[in-house]
Image (cartoon, rainbow, N blue to C red):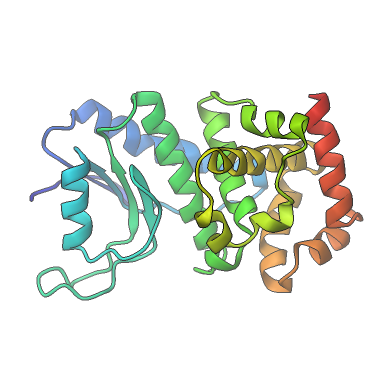
Length: 251
């Protein structure tokens, strides 16, 4: 299957024939917009522009993924793939890392959200020298959800607010490991994404985006969110969580 290429400076977008060029250009440029908002919010200046792949439907999405031997990443309908380096006898000239999106899902606003979300994962991975897997998942997914809502407002934390009212929020410490995150199903998936989003929102409102980025980078080095919080904001993980829950109930 053939993908077209749109190149602008050092940024590349590959896309299926059936995707309108106006949509390609809009999503290509949305990477830059997301980068600007993210850098401004967390006090960084990282120029990070992964390749963007816009695929027409799920069948083509699977073909591209199989051809490039992509073995890990996000979930359908979008995925951030660090690199596809399991050698393919035809496509062995590079590692096809980047952001892959199936555009047969959702409307335009959903596609903007999808690209912003996956870009944030890629941005964090680049910031952490390809060590995103050791970052607490609620910080990773929470910031990705936060940037979605900054650029395309759509969710005020419904599931998290409902769980807070019912006393059924997850302990934040149970939202740190990727394995635990991926093992949840049903409404629990909605709750954990919403809770992560709102915890990051609260942290940014209370302590600022720069402190959040310090928490992200320093906790991966220290191996402890609790230790890093005590150093950065002067309160324990438990105190932060209690304050967050009260804020969530009141707002």
